[in-house]
Length: 450
Image (cartoon, rainbow, N blue to C red):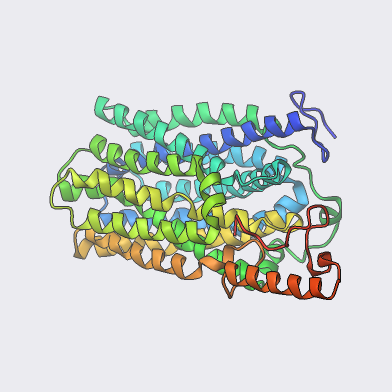
């Protein structure tokens, strides 16, 4: 195996190597968040340069979702065949080339060029997204605690920083083409340096790489037969809809419905992102305290509250409060879902790819839906559609339990195990036969992280 920047791929990493990989993966998430926010921070300007309406911009954004779906359908196979390290490398170069095309489309005022560039930006992003989430899940397993929300917090930190920079450059009158190309060049150089650190192993699985997978779509397709994977995918759909509508339309809603400038719209969205950062960074103790299910349901309530305030704000000072509540609620849905999808280590990459494809389907459906609604009603009212996503997440929350149970409460399961333990104790039979932990004698029922 090659030695790259002093970090040799290994399947038996030391504690120090796990720590360095953690920081490397955090860096990848932050850089990807920054690149996404670089584009989102200039959405009103891009709309004006391309001379399209809200619905027209929504139709162009759909090309990006198609690209992401095309990428996600083959990432599970590609990860098994080539390894996550190669996926991260080639998707970095592809992302830079495609983002440059998007930048040039704003100068040439070419909608077809924008659509093509956005397709390949999202296609490349899909490979990076699956690979870095698989590496994050690997780090989480090695560390033995729920730290996935911290990686998604890093993504949000990158978004927040890029939003702040975007607001400043917009206020200064810097054209999007200059902004986009400069940001892409810096992010690409940084990603190339971080990849060897982030991927502890990242090499193809010898068994999977040498086997016939029945074509590139077979890996993802096989995961859709698992009921739990599909239900987690629907939660990802809802969580992604909640997050992407804010990313795509919040700034435009502030500009069009509240009469503010692009830089003010960026700052309102910045409040949303910072709220996500805060909750995601402290997500591990939150999930540890409440469990996955309760955390998802509390998030859904926060999202609905924020959306209602944003839609019916009596004064502009309410809008930042609405953005904060919306951001708090949007924070944990995706990281909890990806952690749940990666519960089985050997199928982590394929299952992350499978559930991530639901996010891409949301990307196909949501932009035209919101964009066309925005032609009929005020944009801030059109965003109330997201409430349906939050209700879905609330209803399906049990699918993310670590034990895979879809019915019954955790407390009922604990009572059942406790009763059985007492019955066995009365018979002087060993309690461990019920599935207790061999080392501690604790019952095999998750009290935290459910």
